[in-house]
Structure formats: C-alpha cells, structure tokens
Length: 344
Image (cartoon, rainbow, N blue to C red; front, side, top):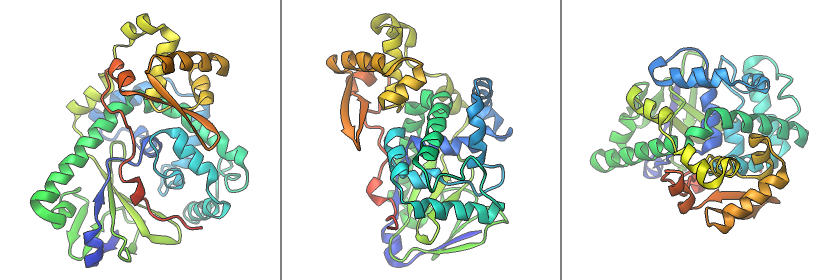
C-alpha cells in the first residue's frame, strides 16, 4: 500500500495532466502487452503487435519485467510532446540519477540486466535503448497516438468537471477503486510488495491518467519521494478501445495525393517520430531521402521544423493533421512545468 499524506498546502496544489507524453505511454504499454488481462480492450492490439514483433524488443523485457518495479525510463526522460524530446532529456540525465534508478531496480530484482547495465556510464548504451523504444513505439503506440491522446484529453476534462462539482476530496475519491481517500491520506493499493509513505512537503500532487497502465501507481525519483506523481487508469471500455484500434486516417487516398513514401513520412511525424534519423529507421529509407520529403512537406505548410539540442525536429501543422484526419495539433504533455523538480 502507498500512503500519500496531504497538508492544506498540498491539497491546494493538486493538478491533473492529460498525459506524460508518448514516451511514458509507450513504456506503460509494455505492461498491457503482457498476458491476457482486459482482453476485450487490448486483445486485438496485442495480437497485432505480437505479430510484428522485432527481435530487438526482447530487450524491453528488462525495462518492464513481469514483477514490478520496472526501470522507470518514463520518469528519467520526463514529459515531452514526442519521443525525441523525452529521449534527449534521458540522454542528458546526470550519471548519478540513472545510477540511482538502476540501484533501486537492483534492490528489488537482485541485479541489473545486461541490457541496462551500461546506461549510467555510456551514451551509446542509452542511445541503443532509445533506438529500441523508438522501433517499438512505431509498431505499438505511434499509429494510435492521436486517438489515445484525444481519449486522455477527454479523461482530464472529466476529472476537471468532478473537481468543479465535488471539490478536491471528490476528485481524489473518484480516481479508481484501488485508490481510497481518507483525509488527510490517499491510500493507493499497489500490491502487497509495496508499503510506502509519501509526504508532499507542500508541493502538492500531480494526477495523470494512463491509457495503457490499468492499475494505479506512484512514480518518484529514488531519494525524492515528495515529488511523486500518481498515475491512475483512464476509464476505457471495449467499444471505445475498438474505435481507437480501428479508426484512422484515409491512408490510401493520402498516398495517392502525396505519394506513398511522403504520406508515410507525414504520418510518422504526426505519430511523434520527429528526427530525421528516427524517420529513416522507421521507414527504412536514407536520411537524405527523408530530408527531401520533409522539405516538400514543409514548403506545403504540412510540417514545421526546428532545432532542439542539436537535433532537427519535425512537427505536423494543423493543416497536416487535418489532412490526416487528426485533431490534436499540440500533442504536448500538459502541465510540464508541474513535473517534479530534478535532483542536481
């Protein structure tokens, strides 16, 4: 059981974000991929993802083993509107922050798997893990991200209505059957293996719904529990999930309009694959070819391009998203400024 203890200042600083971004949901999806839980919701998605599995994906089992806790790549990467932004944050994390996460993992599992062992010391090891995550995201989450994001936006809006109607206590009481509000303490049933107390030190609590994570959990950096985040499952029925898995853009007509490769480039960018290198890997074409296609898309005002920490990042414009029959132009993780303060 996790117990989160509130003061009056903490209650005044309860916030709700729609998502931590595609990196976090990609990591959460590894839990949903395993087993047969909630088969009406995730069955079709599981079968398709398992049918296209890349041998590299085996390394992801080290990040999210069957027995919790996982190696919290989502926390280390932080919020981001695409994988590239979160990936750059992960690459820039101090060695001691990654080492602390590895030590926390080893403390619960007995050792650090070979696939993760070099993450604290070498950028090459971090880049290799990010490359695998990008490939998995492209197969499992990216094709559905705009609809997943829209669902999480709707969940946040619903929580906002509950807050307005019933106050903070009503909000905290309504999150999930395994979350119980007994003022001034929020009890989160995270299984028998966990027994933790969290004091927020006046920083409040960020609440974040998840599409893929179907049990509540508390994210925090080892050594800084007052900056914890509560993740709770978004409401999700089989009918709504079916629409997310089967709905989509008019891909065939778009390919006729733009050409198949250029349409694939635009679709991948809308899915959150933002860098030239990542686009080249996903589409199995050269970086030079990607640059040619993105130049045409940019001239047509379907994408924009900017530099971020030495990378060239591409983002869809509203016109590009409309062409894809998508509706979320920003794709940003809400409340990024509310992300817990990092240790130096």
